[in-house]
Length: 251
Image 1 (spheres, helix red, strand yellow):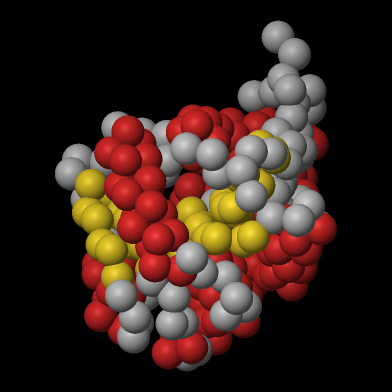
Image 2 (image 1 turned 135 degrees about the horizontal axis):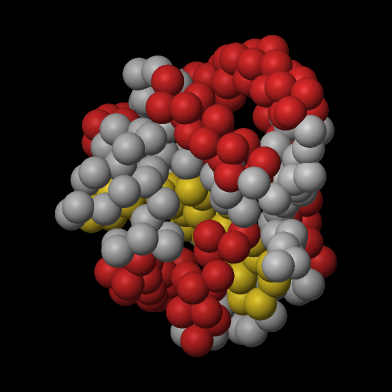
């Protein structure tokens, strides 16, 4: 079976645009269903592929990707929307993407709205994220034609690079957290009650620490990736309501 690699997605509809930023081991594919719902409501939607993602080698996330590269990807996404003569209504991020969505709201006050899904902004540790990355690597290995020696070498490289990469993410998270008071835009916060990667306490603490209007949703019995799991239909409804309500305020 031929595997089609993930790629940046853009749905060109109405004059108001939404940016969606994916997770550490995810891709824009995690937003496909959500994008269709947003497009049907006449929003243009742009979901960039983060540097190092979408390849058949899991180490690319560690060797090509970085917090600097992903912030640049975010800025380029904002530029892309503006170059297409769209008004950037909102930016949302899932897990890792939420860090850069919040940073964008801090640095681009012209963005009207924003939000996060499964945000690690106040996560106590990265243990489950680390375990999740190894699961991600094993899944990709199933589609790689590697010898046992090559698999071993790849695993060693991940062991060598993963902790420094996660430390860099934690440092960036801290820097963004220290600037949360800069966010004045209405904020959507969504989290699965059964999130196995990031405890939903992180999002509850985020709600308490921001100094703006918050639309908070805890989705019952839902895991980490609420854009594709059982929470998605309700998440889509909640997002559309959030956007519609605040679009009338910002216009």
